Structures are given as structure tokens and as C-alpha cells.
Image (cartoon, rainbow, N blue to C red; front, top):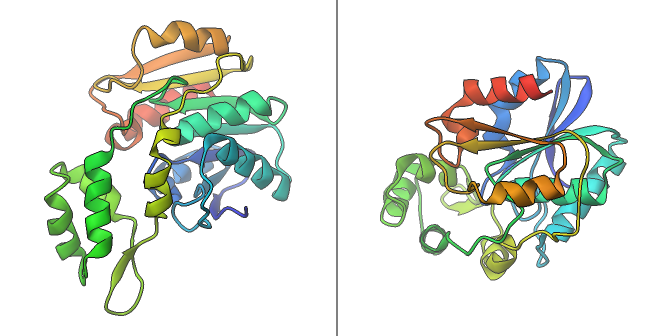
Length: 253
């Protein structure tokens, strides 16, 4: 599958993978900052997200294979790979299976463990939005507000809107397939896999995605793992505390 990407700057290849229901565009500001520091930044839309192709098949093995194929297509070697949430799991699996390709790994607010499905209200809201006739972004925000009361989350989700026709807004996401495969999204990565190169885990201080008891398993699978906790940040740590996040990544690199 030929993934859509935006490439910024020149230097060491640095690939960034967004989270569930996100897109490469969410990382544009940080991508520009990384590119100014001597990296060739690849902001990637994963399958069924953003401008990348839609497919009925969706699981972490395929997402990792997509990244390997992308690197082959672009002749990339010894990459830095960063992923947030779902993108973090894709990044971990890519590193497990292609350690010769991935030189350094950055995992943002996710562990390799199983997570129970917990996006139901958001998915219900997006489904209702997709089925409604929405003719302005303001209407879309009001509509989604019934399902998603948190404004930053709502605005993040509404980035998926585009004008399908001059009169109708639609979603870029392949919503049906993402809903059908929601169990696969939470799947644990195989515990027998390991990666022994430099790895940074970044956790939001207010987020419960990486718990203290997860660190033992993480260290067993990532022998060189370091953890940075960013105080006052939730799950979208890179958006909520951008400067602190940038500093943590640059110090690691």
C-alpha cells in the first residue's frame, strides 16, 4: 500500500506516525521543528487515515508492513521512528520486526500491552456525523459536541472533515473498517519480541496509558528503554506540552 506523506527538511530520516483517528497533519508544527534541527521528517498517514488509501484489512502487522514498504519505496535506511498511541504500537512492532532499519525508537504514551476498546462514544459521534448532512464546520462541531464534550478532542477529530462536494462535508477516515477492527486496535504485541537499540518512552503525567507496573514488561522487551514523564500533560502530550515534548525528544536524539 502506497502511504501518503509530507516530507520536511533534509538529513537523517525521521518518520512520525499519528494515533487512532488522527493524521499526519496533527504533527506539522513539531515536524517543522524537527526538520529545523537537521532531520528529514516524514509525516505519514497510516492506512484508513488521512489521505492514505482505504483497505478492508487493518491490524498492526499490516501497519508495520506498510512502514517497511514505505522505507523501501523511499530508499530510507537507519531511520528514527516515532509513534503516538496507535502509531506507537505500529512503531514498536516495526522496530521488533526490522531492527536493522530502525536506529532509534520513540514511543508516545502507549505500552505494548492490551487495551480494552474505549473509543465507543467518539465512534458513535463520528458515525452519526458521517450519516448526517452537514454543510458547515460550525454545524459539525455543534453536532459532535453532543457526543464529545471535550473541545480539544472534538477539534482534533474534526480535522478529518473535508468537502466531498461543494455542499457536503465528509470524513477522510475509513470509519466502517476502523469500527469493525476496534478489538485489533487494542491488541497486545507479542511478548517474545525484543528491540535492543536506543528507545524513549514519553508519558503524559496525567495520562493512565502507561502505568508503573507496565515498566517491567517494557524493559524486558526494550532493553535500552528510557522513560520521560511530562507533567501536566494527558494522552495528547505532544499537543498539550509541545515545548517540553520537543525538548525531551531532542535531548534523547
